Length: 261
Image (cartoon, rainbow, N blue to C red; front, side, top):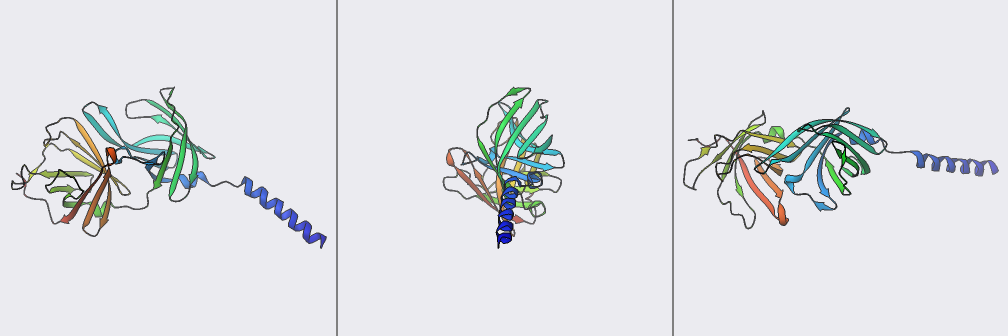
């Protein structure tokens, strides 16, 4: 009987010791694409979402950034070096403007679906920029690229919308797209000649760049982000904008774009 109790006691000690020392494989869990959704328990405005992809020893960072007072652009897959040290994520490299970036994030929780982390250090050209916010990201688990390619015809469907006309978008497999507009509901469709558009899909996050908005008369670069949901030949766009506004569009896939002037 003594031997049995002794064996149970030793087993209990060993189990507790193993439980205390065993840690998740943070590096393996981290690999993949992560989309920021929440900051400090608040839904992120869709245009402010960023994407991190961890593969090998590289981090590929995608986000929209202000270039000047009249221009902003989505920069896709900027490349940085990264390594993990326990629950620490260390990232370093140069951004698109040539700035030296050095960051250290600490994982709070991580599993196959969600990542939560805090910022221990964020330096630009050696200068520390304190950040005490908590970031939450979801892991990408779907590829909509093939279904997304094609021509889509749609209209806004949210209460209070002032955009009451239909729109055409023609998305190509090489990441470019054409946009068609008309100057009145009865006018002919026109392909926007100076669009120079590019689109990027990360899971259900759609980011689009374009140049010189003929409709508004403004100049410069612009970008916009949406969450998309696809069911057969129907697609819905949803975006969280400033002041709690939720913007939605509904569109259908059609056989081809309208005849352009």
